[in-house]
Length: 304
Image 1 (cartoon, one colour):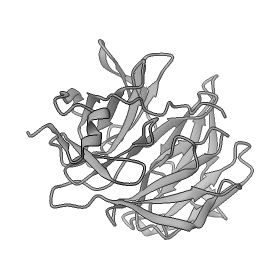
Image 2: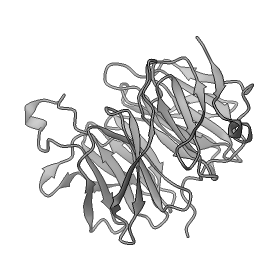
Image 3: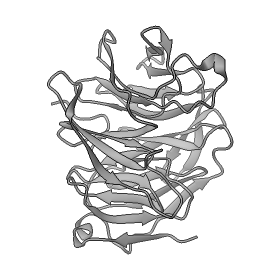
């Protein structure tokens, strides 16, 4: 299985070494109901949480100790993140909702419907430093007709008090991963079906400034893999799964390099470690890591 760091531009030297080893940390996850997904670093605990969708459980990776089960029966949760208070936010596929695990362990439903129509299958989620939750809800038509409450793909925003729910856009074929720029003025959203990343400036209201909609990067190619999962480092470089591995782009969308890990697809990723310089990522069946030189944007995002 080919594993290497490919360099497309000299700027990559400041971000990752081409000789950096790519390490498989654990394997045997995923299945027909979904892959390994949604890694998020729990900084104060020094561990990584990630979803094993098919087996309906959340896993915990502790460096030096390996992988254990953090929680069984997660409603086949997919994407995970944390809000400014450190609470876990999860996209629950089977329950068709976004939830928040409170500090006392109670579960709060952030959103499960829009204008009376059920969500389809929430996929990935990010939380801005002001506490607003942004998530993708792709529609593929694979569910039974009785689940077709809504037949379009949506990207949504929910305010911290859960009182305002906004459909930000419905013109993606399959919205998937999403990430903010370090200053939170730009939201990147990838479209797995179209094979590209779009970028939007954020309006003062917290919604998308639609007139700024632009194609940030096209990640199609002859090798397996489509845009899925996305993270940004503190210098504004964007990491995203795509054809052949994980692509690294500068803030203008210039392709600097690619992490070739040998799996058919990258499902998601997260920065972690004490210095936020370890990139953890999931494929369909494995958890993998590689060290980088520029730290990722911390999760939760520091309050501004």
